[in-house]
Length: 131
Image (cartoon, rainbow, N blue to C red):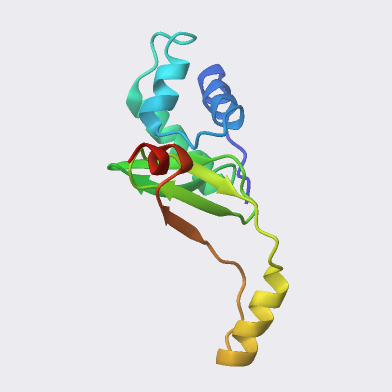
């Protein structure tokens, strides 16, 4: 799926910023990280490149939190937790076998599953302790 596109320093920097964080950043967060390196970058450029990266399969959009789409450079299927208080998006390691789950859905419903997205919502440890 990775379409060949012209490389640019700005595009490479945007992708590197996403790959070097585990905070599941928003476009604005990414823009604020790239701006010191490329002072002439616009938020529109960040959005256009995020769309391109998403189309190419380089990143995924995890969820929209507080009106902002959040991104992840880890594109293999995995589970997320979103804190409804602070908006943190956190990767969750699960031990359940996808194959076992897919086989169960196939046997119970007759569906053939290719992939799934699982997201938990609630309060993270910090928010849970402070309320």
